[in-house]
Each structure stands twice: as C-alpha cells, then as structure tokens.
Length: 252
Ligand code: 6PG
Image (cartoon, rainbow, N blue to C red; front, side, top):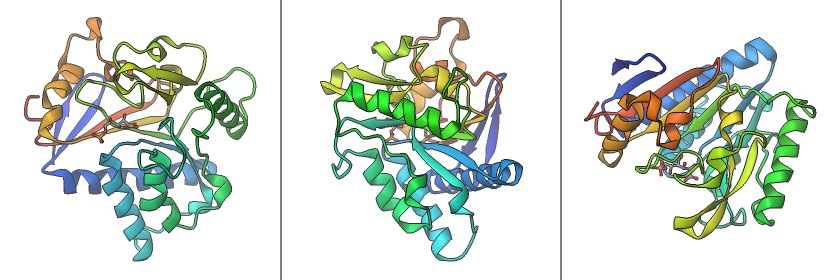
C-alpha cells in the first residue's frame, strides 16, 4: 500500500481490487467502532454500484467467522443514493446491500433506512429526507452529520447519483433530491452536496483502469475549475479518504 499526499484528501493506493475491498471493510469497521465508542451509535450511508458488493461480502464473512465482531444493533444504515426501482429489482442498491450484507448480520430491521424508491421519485426523496431528519433528530435546520458516507465514482466523474449536467448538482437546500438522469432516462434519488459535505468522514472507493483518467482529473485537476461532481465532495470539517487500486491510480 502506498499513499498519495494531496492538500485536501488522503489517498491510499492498494495493489488490486481484493486489497482495496479489504482496506475499505477495515476502514468501515474502524469508523464504526470509533463512533460507537464515542456516542454509542454509528450512522453510515452505503454507496451503490458494483464496487461495494465485495466490501459488504467481506464484512458478512467476518461476522460469520466471528472475526471483527461489531455491535450491529448500534449501526444505523442509510443509502447515499438509490435507483428509481422497487427493492427487489436487480438494479436496486438496497437489494444488493441486503443480499451481500444486511441480511447476514444481526441488524434490527428498524436500523435499515431504505429509500422507498418504488414510489414517485419526488415523493420518495421528500420522505427520505424526513426520515433522515427524524433519525438524526434534526427536524429543524441543522444538517445531519453522518459518521461515514461511502461513495463510488463513475468514469464520468459522477458520485452517488450526482451526474454531470444534472439538476441536483445545484441543490443547496434539500438534503435528498429526485434527480433526473438523462442518460438513463430515469430519476435517481440522491444525497446532495450539503448533506455529503457535512459528514465526519467520506470514504471514496474506486478501482479499475477505466477510472484512471477521471481520478487524475478529480484529484489533480485545477481546483478552481471544478467540473466533475466528485470534485465537489469536500467535507467542511470531515475527513476525505480515497481508497483506490493501482489500476485506477496509474495516472496519478
Ligand atoms: C450507484 C452508485 C454510483 C457508483 C458509481 C461507481 O448507484 O451506481 O451510487 O455512484 O458508486 O457509479 O460504480 P461502480 O462501483 O460500479 O464502478
């Protein structure tokens, strides 16, 4: 493992996807234990897509093997974004997380806060924002501060479901938005930048050569001309950690 020093982010480069997944699982466990020790609770938002599946699988195997025991009853699970599909749909981020992890650890069902993406997208986003505010006890103004938000990055520089050119990029009031994504001809429900940037820790996980060009743009591009959504994830006071593999880091 090697590190790349940047002024605004800690970047750890792992040899391959397997090592990247293990490092991300260990970071999840570290953040969880730290938060539970400090406040008796761990609030985490999971990312979607394919990369997290291996990470979730490792956490489930750890639990089954009695390794890295975690007080799952003190873990509150949210989703940083969700496709506009029912929970049993093959595209559902909830379904992937539930099959890979949530159904395999002793999590009280009430601790899993699923986006009801089977509803109208605008209604699902508004309902999720209410659920967030209620769970964090922030029914008034202050922004919920997650202990950890996991994010991925697409080759186009999107993160969560904040895609280039989409309306939610400009959202500064709501914490959750129903975002129309032209290229999918569909809505996505997504956290917005104010919520992301209030987190105590953001952990990006990105692997594969197809992300190398964008990773260079996002991490080393001119900070004054931020044109890719992932560049606008800048926690105000939280930690920004990038876990990448050598293939994705090949142009850093
Ligand atoms: C989603 C994710 C999305 C994902 C990136 C990277 O719902 O798809 O939230 O932002 O993290 O597209 O996806 P991969 O890990 O599959 O490359």
